[in-house]
Image 1: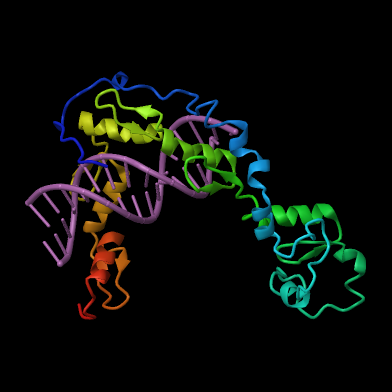
Image 2: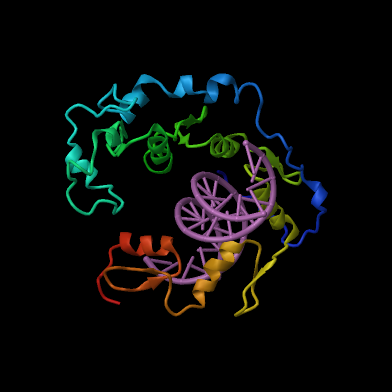
Length: 236
DNA sequence: CTGGGGAGGGGGCCC
DNA sequence: GGGGCCCCCTCCCCA
């Protein structure tokens, strides 16, 4: 990004001076084409093999060579504190086994719910962006991300484009000079809530970000990082 | 060099 | 599912 344009601080403009965000901000054809999101593109052999490295057991069978005893003790959720006895673990209860963590269920529904809640986080990350390498667990998240490429919200004053309406709203304030967020300590006002929050740190004796070496605190993570990068002397 | 303000981006949550 | 909002973070610039 180039240098930001320097604008007069208190120019009052109508809210109608910027382009309202179109309801449908997704480019219909090219970007959201059927080949963009649909599983056939995403669920390729590479992904499947990465998700189910042992291969072939996705339908429920135990992975060959998998140490089930070692794995099952890990994600027990406290339901079996002791070693399983043959009587308490009938073969029927292990008919459906999670390919990710090897936890066994007596019904397919039980396995499905488990996978949905715990073990398919990676598997559900299956919506790929056409413009970059990012992947998302839901179409909604992907659509939101694609906005950062298409930038559908355009400022009518300067033509700058933003991914989301509220980002544009914040930008409009740089034209209007509106600063709705006030500091209760010094009455200084800010256009952005995050910047007010950062400012509030300056009123605090103990800042939020602390150096582990010298225990000095900083109002911002970036300041702490700078402090650490330039070499903490270890003394306050 | 440090601290702070301004501006903007991305993910997640809630309605 | 989509939009609004919040939170966290980063980068740039300046005193």
